[in-house]
Length: 585
Image (cartoon, rainbow, N blue to C red; front, top):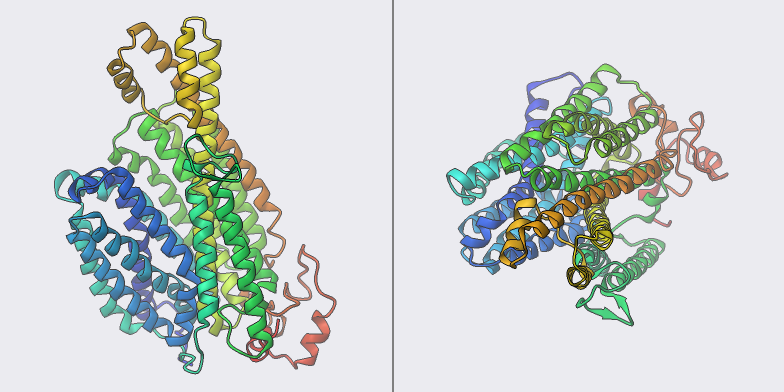
């Protein structure tokens, strides 16, 4: 095993962190740029907005379906090698994307190649931090990764908008090729543990995992068009139920079959794709659950806030990005400041405070959004959201990786990024569905009860909005009504009702996200109360069947009565090492 770097700050450690952070920045920046530039991209490659949305959906599917496999490959061929191969694939994808002149080429470059590159890079980043940094340094390192991602989310619209306005969106992807080349040069300084050359990839397990995750996420992503349970008018259905429901059910059943197969492999003494015993680790299981909740809420807020700024207030993309910057700055302060100022803080307490800060931010945002709101109303909520996300980022990654043996850190990276992708997909779909449903309901109720609106318009509204209303600006709605020959008086009435209904939709969506944040608090009991570097080696949390916190650090979750005898019987061998030597769950 390669020696870990010194715990003292050094130029070498700083170079490693800079290299990994640069890759994390690229992964997040890409989607932000595509989202803000999609109109121009669609024009340049000869397709429609729907075509670009298809590319975005496929990118999300590739990430969700193959992330666990990417983590496993890193353990087999070496994390640094996986990182470097991923960078090469990602760089080629960026070049193909920048040169694309048609939708199929764009999908090949962006959705497929960049997606496959990312599934090798992101789990490797998690594992390489564990290899190159001591436990005391990991909270800051993982916190920086999250902060860099948040900065990319905020900076993406600015760079994308500026490039699209003054140059071309293609230059963003050409620039990524150069950055990837620099990352590859710097990556030679990254230390890694020896690859497990005797391990083999579980091909059937990989197919089941990719199919189950891909089908589930695809169903979630299509929910806004198909409906969750009841099929929208004109949408496909099976047995009177939306295909979204059937895709999710089919995906979950496939994942269940995947888990059964993994247990079978472990019982036979063969190498599984995922050690099921890892999921019995209380710390790891709680961390993955909370990552899912965090990114669900985070994605929902990132969906709602830009809509409020760009549609309701009709701000340009550049100013919209500027208004989100307080989140990135406060996230950076919390993610880096907490490990430095309070290195021995209880991770469980910090996680609960982080969730509470996110909840405060959502509630402040909900109370500040009204008919007379101004752009500045999002500043303080974004600060609280950033502090909350930064606090979580400073703890979750470090305690999860430290709860298993270092050789399994790549597997943890794959699971972690899968949880974040699932959370983001569900968060965006949930916020969008609820917002549109509330907007439609409020608008129809307002129009129906308004005596100034003719009955013929009320009937037409019920028919047209049966599939859901569109979240459009006042200017867009006024133009559409004028083109339809609606009288100026009726135009004003409809626009005013739409303005009020938009606020209702935003309020309901944020209200549901706040409830999800509260629900997340119930899953914090498995997070330890001491930092990994403060725990005795023999008391570390287990990735075996007993799982949980050290004996003197009770978890809120029930613990197996076999924990203590098992630890004594192994003579102090780490639970993760026991799981590696005995894969039976």
